[in-house]
Image (cartoon, rainbow, N blue to C red; front, side):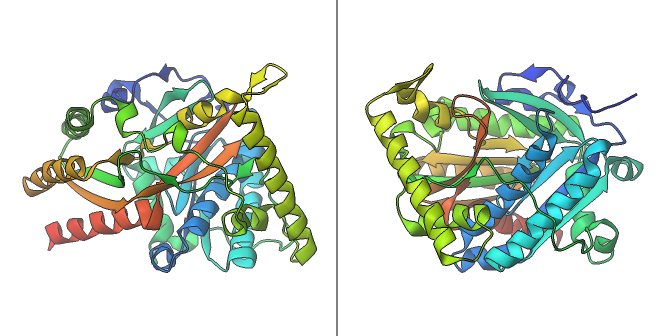
Length: 393
């Protein structure tokens, strides 16, 4: 019996707090695969100022697979410097080709090494881990997959560890393979925080049982509500802070992805094209123009609503708009939890967020990946790993 529609048929949650209830998660079928990508040496690349390119390649690996899947729903998580994507077995061969093409893009256009590979869900389960998933409706246009069970973390470790990487990383394939990156856009200016700071948070519970860990994550989310109030108060993308960019340096990443030719004039033509599209978009939004059944005056709200600023993939990831005082209150709470052994965490503080977009329809299916500027999730993960190593030493 085909498991292709396993994810599509799952019930849809409506509150992010529901991810702390284990009954809302369902095990992924054994015959599925976990696709994993990450930029090798991403921390060094980010620290040298290349965080936008690193983010872009993580998004590229997702759009390449979504374009293969077409209308079939598949779950994915954007991690800042890479991604995790789950697919049924029928998509494996075309997905492998698409990720090899994405790796080639990373090398040719950005001079970065994108590690790509796959781990069968069966391998994860045979090692006594699980991949459990829950669907969460973020907006009318975006439904998000969230993961627990330890399986994604175990699969990522298999792909990265020197002793096992050869068994799961995709080996060199044909050099003329191509991937479809249509729908990927990177056209917005950096988004400055509505409260002064943009905090990238990663937290991992350390209890001995899943129910205890669920309570720890629930405590974090409830404490966030106490410190910040409603989600809208700490949302890192305020609609009135969204501004399209017309600078070559901000549009160069998308241009390198969509124009594989190294011909200068081909790239300049594409830059001109997206600048004209941005100008039209600005005019349509500014004057709330109606095009067909779509009112462009609503588009900024649609974008802000369809972001992945909070998610769960064996640990909690959030990008938060914060005041300095609120961030200190959050840090004090997390540090107390760290000192009593409940969790490890990492924070990175910037004044703005980055947004990379996958847009299939302007008034429909879309997701906008959010990360903190100047390092975001990658540097928060570095801080969390340092705390974890300190606990173990």
